[in-house]
Image 1: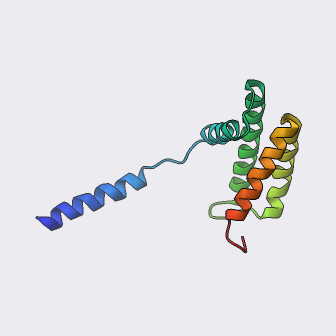
Image 2: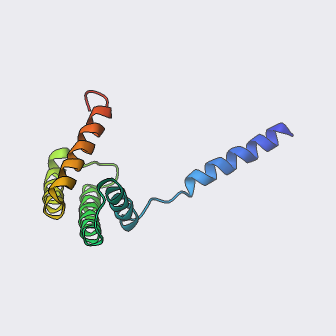
Image 3: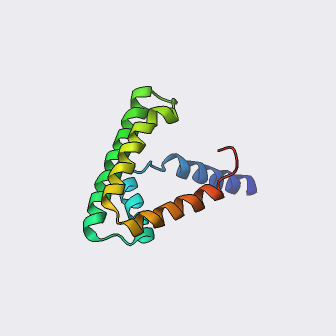
Length: 117
């Protein structure tokens, strides 16, 4: 009886992970924008522009990954133009205070990463 219950629990757990879906580009852009809104106190106009920038960046990333094929990852050098364009767009949208806050957040995140990454 225990084996049967354990088998059912294991099956349900595996089935649940199998059916988990990847978030859409729009969902990922929304999540990134909401995090930036929370961290940087964005205005409504800034939020709209940053959502568009996030959406463009994520679409470009997905297109690059699709072009490389299944299981292949783009190199940082291949991704650099996408990040540069996104960074320039964001810098044009944010105020000086928001830019300073964003740099603080980046520095804090970099300090949290293990060495060598």
